[in-house]
Amino acid sequence: MIDCDIHNEIGDVEEFLSYVSPAQRRWFRGQHQVGLPGYPWAHPHSFYRDELEAGPGGEPASRIDLVQREVLDAYEVDAGLLTGDVGVAVSLMPNPYRAAEFARAHNDWLADRWLDAEPRLRGSILVPAQDPAAAAAEIERLAGDPRFAAVLLVGGSERPYGEPRYLPILQAAADAGLPVAIHSGGEGMGISPAAGCAGYPSFYIEWHTLGSGGSIMAHLVSLLCHGTFDRVPGLKVLMMEGGLAWLPGIMWRLDTNWRGLRAEVPWVTRPPSEVLREHVRFTTQPLEHTDGNDALLWQMLEAVGAPDILCFASDYPHWDFDPPDRMLARLPAEWRQRVMHDNAVELFAGRLALREAA
Amino acid sequence: MSRAWHDVASVDQLHRDGVVIARAGGREIGVMLDEHSGRPVAIRNRCPHMGAPLCKGTIRSRETGTPGSYGLETDRRVLHCPWHGWEFDLDSGACPEDDRMRVAVYPVRVEDGRVLVEA
Image (tube, rainbow over all chains, first blue to last red; front, side):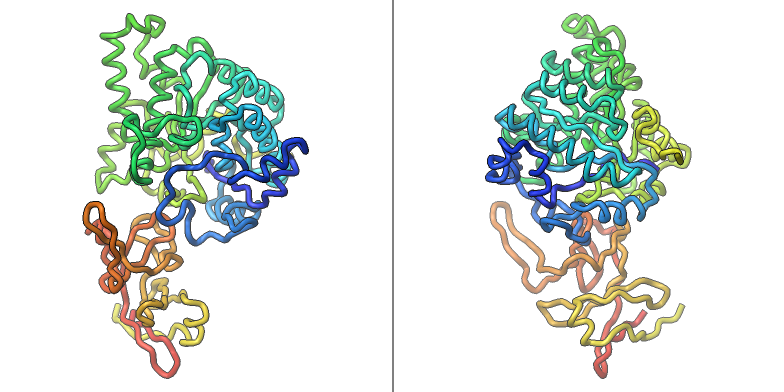
């Protein structure tokens, strides 16, 4: 089983800061949440599962043995992708130079403190998307490092990721043979515009319902309308934690609109849903709770390419975690092998897979 | 299977730890101390939603309200699942938000310094 979304936390801030350049360390130390923008809304109870053991800094998942015991061993995970947590908001910092330094430090900290210690874990490369040239340079710096399996972008953004300004990031990822993972979150944070397309929502429940899925929809439609996958043919994108039940509706709508409006984007020469099947994958969590209508959900997802487009993710240690054993039992039997394992092996070109014994 | 009373812990242990997990009647059951009422409650330690260890959650009063105003039903106690936050009524085991979801609640009594659960 492969878990495409395991969050690890910065518990020991001083340990993390030791990877930051001495010239910038004092600034990061003096900021709330090491300089990263936060949400306008807090979860009403906790962003994390309540029962997990607290590690350094009082955070769960902030020490390798916690991740090993609570997710890798507990669910017999063959390989898991570490996606950090608050660090993904680096692209929403107003200061691009601080952001580049944070991303570099986070990548080195991840490699040193986590990836070296546990062969089942691979990392995702954080990049400062607000400075695409710097982001591409960071990808190139780590391109040959087999401990990293993806480039990580955040759902909140200044413009949707099909915009040409982001091409250097997408090209560098494709050149390195790494998929770009776009993880929901950060919408309405820092330099990102408000979540939900209608101004700031009032509640966390609104953000969690609309904001996170909304950014993923926007990036998906943008990448397809800009012909991004013709510009960067080797590009693979993994959409993370944006929900799934909306996908058939959006793709039916986009394909229909393309037939009537294609003159605006004449470089799009095939139905966008066809391009999606070749280049885009989605993590399963949080798979919608369907109130007894799972058969309907599977049927709708099949219409847009499931099970081949789905990769399992647990989202440990967050409150809306999907337990692997429950997901396995819930999925149609003939989907299980692909969703829980094979699709991720293909997407990450073997970088995220059970490591062969030396 | 006929039900029987099971001795699951000492009262001292329950007061010290706040929760005791035991197997009784073929089920994993958690006995939790509700600090508000001071009484122990026994609940199956498995959330019907996704299988979380329910008794690692927290017991609290239920938030209530009318549009635009917040209130608290101090005497209505619910167990809040540690994973997804679904709530279960301590008396009935029912999830007020989903009538398909219900967790088993067991009779519990204290006798000679021991906590007994009928399961």
